[in-house]
Amino acid sequence: MVSMASNAARIAIIGMGHVGSTSAYALMLRALVSEIVLIDSNTALAEAEAADIADANALARPAHIWAGTYQDAATASIAVIAAGAATHGNESRLSVLSRSAVIVGACVDSLSKAGFVGIILVAANPVDIMTQIAFRKSGLAAKRVIGTGTLLDSSRLRQALAMKLDVAPAALEGLVLGEHGDSEVAAFSTVRVGGLTLEGFANDGEPFDHDALAKDVREAGYLIVSGKGYTSFGIATAVVRICEAIIRNERAILPVSTFLTGEFGIADVFLSLPCILGSGGVERILLPDLSAEERGALRRSAEVIRQAVATLDDRP
Ligand SMILES: NC(=O)c1ccc[n+]([C@@H]2O[C@H](COP(=O)([O-])OP(=O)(O)OC[C@H]3O[C@@H](n4cnc5c(N)ncnc54)[C@H](O)[C@@H]3O)[C@@H](O)[C@H]2O)c1
Image 1 (spheres, rainbow, N blue to C red):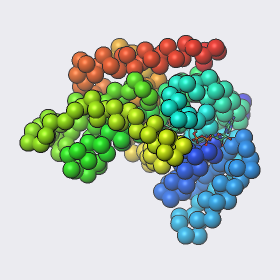
Image 2 (cartoon, protein in one colour):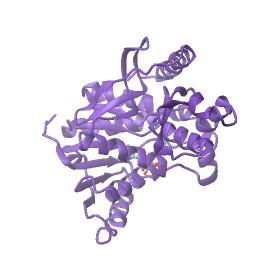
Image 3 (cartoon, helix red, strand yellow):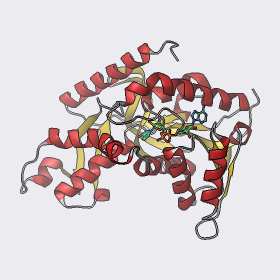
Image 4 (cartoon, protein in one colour):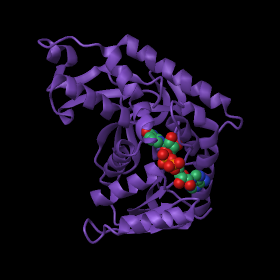
């Protein structure tokens, strides 16, 4: 393995399907880095996406975007893994586990062989387990292997609450934690609107059904997939937001999938908790003041992930 210094101005995206290509486009629009290298086992597809995005260069923020190799990715500061088995119809994210595991494993092996020492950001589903595979195979420090986790779900929760409460989604905080999947935990105790708890803010309004709202958030992805066949814009925005926090060393606090070592009594799995993100990756994992019910649901979510990991023939 050849080890190289990473280049803060370069991001590599592996997998040029709906998620990877939309992430590349969103990354270009955000003008975060000057070089974006695109990789797919279908090289014609990667070349076409690179050419299509580069067509916007004269009209948007110019970046060097090209279909490259793992050698090109080796010096990137972040490698985004968007190659994985996509779900269709009502397929759960866990149902594509073994297919995605082979794909993500191959991508990480190729990155390691090329001497990659940057930060790996995994979007492929089931994302918590794919991040665990990337961690074990890459040999990188846990803080440098991150999954998009429940950042997308938390954004969906904030959007749904914002509609109910008639405030801007950016004006309220709220976290979905645990698995990015069916066992995720909408932690209503973490909701803050102008410093008020949800109950405090909603005092005058109609009481609403927390469980129904959590279900809508949990099932939002299925609804989008049933209409357009895939999801892309929400996850791509989450990918770019995480890249931004890392590249700019923002110390932003975002719920992402990270390796737990005893937080809330959970160890040896990846799942989402709020993390401080900076140039080193996950700089610190935060433990919000959850209710007893939410803590129990988080532990059950960890168990779902643990059991799914155990079904893989080759434990990562
Ligand atoms: N984390 C999230 O919130 C979230 C949201 C949406 C989709 N996803 C996941 O992201 C992944 C991609 O979804 P999509 O809709 O873009 O799928 P897609 O089928 O459109 O694209 C997958 C791409 O990966 C490529 N690929 C396959 N094996 C490869 C390999 N070994 N090396 C390089 N490229 C390879 C394929 O050629 C294809 O272009 C899936 O696992 C999906 O479930 C995650």
